[in-house]
Image (cartoon, rainbow, N blue to C red; front, side):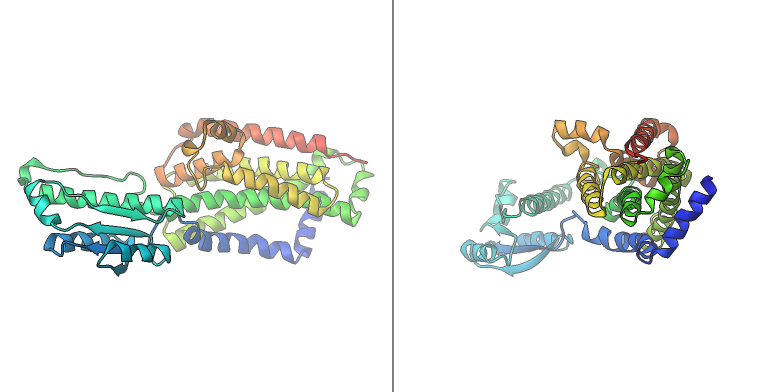
Length: 363
């Protein structure tokens, strides 16, 4: 009986002109466009420089700032008031003022004050830009101090583990792959049963002796298969476009993806069962999807959220998959490292599918 139900589902998918296209265009567009657009690394910050010293040291400092790759020169102003006009007109984001006798004070006293003024209308850009600039100035100061230290006394060596080049794309791509599975499992499946309600074909199924669990299983399996195909396409795009391959075992990713798809497809089918129209199902799925994405840690770390929000993420299945994807892709985590995540995803799969069976009424 399951075989014939699956044949019906796959025939419906093939007849739908829109669905096959969106299924294969979705990973291509999201994985090629989003990692470049959803980039929280601040670059091309417009900098206005006020150099009141005009010495070799002040020029070395400005050269170091501009060669960092984070800043681009908006203008060089003779006075702070003129630089402030650039901030007010949005031509510049940050002002760096180097005082007169900067080199002299630094040589004699070992300290010299610099002024950093940031446009804080965009608090994130202003704060991060100021931090970048302060960090570069600190590095410049350390270089100057270490230049007078003998080679045997050493210095500070920084090593970036797991993401040595600090590439934000390497951080975002695994998260977007998890989001793709969420869209397929939750959003598209939410439109499945309710579309049959609108067409009237669901009544033909309801009068047959097909058990509810078997009927929902026939709805779940096609999206489960499609999701795994999308994961494969996404992994190929990550490799071909970004050169990103998992440090860990790809089989662990497929294992988690298989269970996660069962969970989220069950969630989508539960929404579809209680909805009367596709519009209602779409808005309900979209409502939950926004919450899941914002509380998943995909864009902002869970640890930076308020305590109540951190506790709320525990009941968010997307959080666990995002963490698993990043841990396997970047750190090479093993299944023993991810036991807690696996148990959580399995519990979600059981809960959502029971909810789907209970929600579906044969009437």
